Image 1: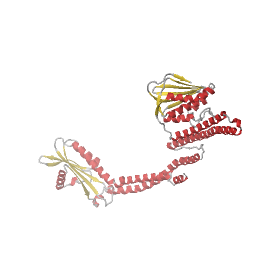
Image 2: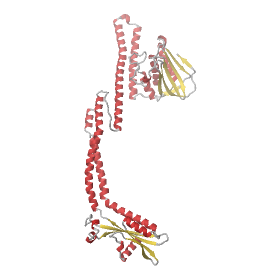
Image 3: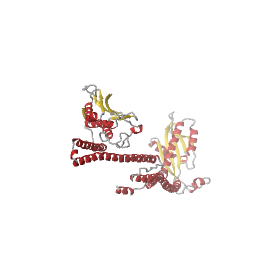
Image 4: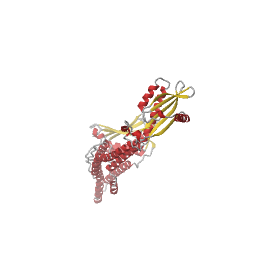
Amino acid sequence: MKNQIQKRKSGIRVKWKLLAFLLSFAAFMLVVIWVFQIHMLGSFYRNAKYRELDTISKILESCLGTDALGEAVESCAKEYDTCIRIFKRTEGNVFVEAASADVTSDCTIHHLKEEKLQYYYKQTLLGDGSYTENNEIDQGPGHFWAEGEAKLFEVFDRDEKIYGIVHNLFVTSEDGTQYMVMLNSVLTPVNATVKTLKTQFTWICLTLLVGAMVFAYLISRNISRPLVEMNKAAKQLARGHYDADFKGTGYREICELGDSLNYASSELSKVDSLQRELIANVSHDLRTPLTLIKGYGEMMRDIQEENTPENMQVIVDETTHLSDLVTDLLDLSKLRAGSRKPAYESFDLTETIRDVMARYDRLVGGDGYDISFEYQKNVTVRADRMMLLQVVYNLINNAINYAGKDKRVRVVQALRGESVRISVTDDGEGIAPEDIALIWDRYYRVDTTHKRSVVGSGLGLSIVKGILELHGAHYGVESAKGHGSTFWFEIKYEKTEDIGGNGREE
C-alpha cells in the first residue's frame, strides 16, 4: 500500500496538467488563426470576389430587357467596385452595347479591341455560356504614381502583382433576347496585409501564451487548494480521526465531493462506534456461557455431590447458547460477503412456522410465555426453507427478548393480494420513532445497556434483514414507545388448493 501511495505521488499535479492543457489549447488556436487568417487569406479574398460577381450577375439578369437595367448597372458597379458591359444580340447576330459602367482606373473590358471581344465571345461559347479569366494588370511607374492616385496605392509593394478578373456569360431575357454580360473586378494585393497580420500574430502568440500560463496558475490554485486540504483531511481519517473536516469550496463538484466525504466520515464514525459496541456485547455474550461452563465444570470436578443431571443440563444449555452465537456471527459474515445463496424450493410456510413454534414448548410450559400462531389456511411459497425458518425463529426470539410483563407473543399469517404477510407482535416497551430506521442494523441495539438475551444471540434482526433482501421480500416494523412492536415481512405465495383450515395454535 505504501508503494502504491509513493507511486501515485510521482504523478503529475493538477496545476501542471492544467497548464499543459491550456498551453496546448492556446497553441491549437494560434495554428487555427495562422491557417485561416494568414495562410488562406488570399484564397478567402478571391472566393469572396467570385461570389460578388455571381451576385452581380443575378441582379443584372433580373433587370435584362427592362428600363431598370441602366440604373442596376450603375448601382452594382459602384457598390461592388466592378466595371460592367452588357451587349444585346440584334438581328444578324450582331451584339450591340446596351449598358455600361466604368468605375475603376484598371478596367480591362472597356479598352478591349474587336479581336479581344471576339476571343471572349468564343471562350464563353466553349464554356457553355460562362467564362472567367484572371489577367495580370500592368503596374508601371506611371500607373502607381500618377497624380491623385499615389496615396491610394502607396501601401503596396512595387513587386506585388495586381490581377483583374474578367467574368463573361450569356444570359437570355424573358422575351427571348440574348445578352452577353461582361464583368471586370480588380483583386487588390494582400501581401502587405499579410505582413501586418504576421506582426500582429507574433504579439497575439506572446499574449496568449503568457495569458494561458497566468490563467492556468490562478485556476490551478483555486482547484488544487481545496483538493490539497481534502487530501490532508483524508489522511487524518485514515488514522482514525473521524472528526476530519472536508471543506469543499470554489466549484460545485468540489463542494459535492466535500459533502460526500463528510458524510462518509460521519458514517464511518458511526460504524466504528457500533462495531466497538458489537465487539463488547459479543465478548460479553461469549464470556457469560464460558464462565458458567467453566464454573459448573470445576464445581462438578471438585465436589462429587454436585455431579448432577441439573448441573450437566446447565453446561449443555450454555454450550448451545455459545454455539448459537458463533453460528449467527458466521451467518452475518456470509450474508455480508454474499457467499450465502438461497436454495429455492416450494414448501408449506404454515407448516414451517408450526415447526418453529414447537421449539418454544419449554418457554411456554416452564417460563410462562404465551406464544400463539394465527392463520386462515396453509400457504405454499417458493423460497429457501431453512432461511425462512431462520427468519421466523429470529423474529420470535426478538419478540420474546423484548416481551412485556405478560410475556405474550403473537404470530399472525395473513394473505394480502398475491403475497402472504407474517407478523410477530410483542407487548414490550416498543421502539422510539428515531430508532426505527436503525433497528435492522447489525450493530444496533435499542437498549444501550447490554443485557443477555433470553433466547438466541441478539443478532437475529441483522440476519433477518440479510435473508429477506436476498429473497427480494418486503419487510418492516410498526412500533411506538410503550405500545409494543410488530415485525413483519411479505413474500409471494403459490396459489394452490386449500390444504388446511382456519386455526390458532399456542
